[in-house]
Structure formats: structure tokens, C-alpha cells
Amino acid sequence: MSIQEIIGEILGHPLGERGDQYPLVAIDAVGLPSTVRSAVEEVAFAGRVVLLGYTPEQVPLRTKLFVQKELDVLGTRNATPPDFLPVAVGAERAMAAWFTS
Image (cartoon, rainbow, N blue to C red):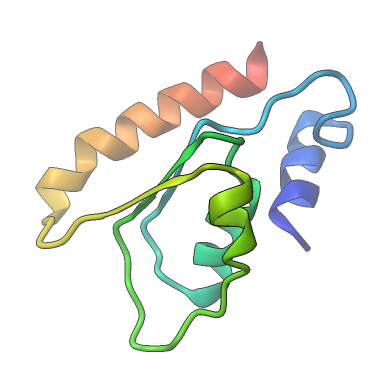
């Protein structure tokens, strides 16, 4: 199941069908090839992808999306669980507001 289908299931209708917008920021804290690809594919045009997780595996990406969507891609390292907790809480609140509005 794609991330679009998962979000559509949560919304109760396909993403974009009722004017829903793609997120301006996609944060990948998992680092799996599939989650990195999803972050790049699902973020809005002129959006930002933040990579917290990483994988020793190579991640094939369609580089056309970086240019076509004019994306900013940022990475960070050395975060500890206490560093990540405020980010997770903020993301949870933002998602709750986004899905209920």
C-alpha cells in the first residue's frame, strides 16, 4: 500500500480529491529505502524533505523529482531520543490538526 493510499484511508477519500494538500515538509526518521522514496514522492512542490534515519543500503531515487518539484533535502545526525521527542510531539499535533480540518 502506498503512502497516498494510507493517507486516503485515514481521510476517507483519495488524497487530493477534495483539495487536500500534500505536506510542505516530509520527515523520514526510519531510513528505509521505501520511506525515503515516499518522503520525496509525497512532499509538496517546493517542499522540504528532512532525513533523520539512514540506511547502509543504496536508495534508488528519481532525481527528476528533486528538480521538477524544486525540493530542499536536508539531513541531520547524532540526534538522541530526548532530541527527537519534541519533534515527534509537534508532528503528532500537526497531523491531528491536518486530518481533522
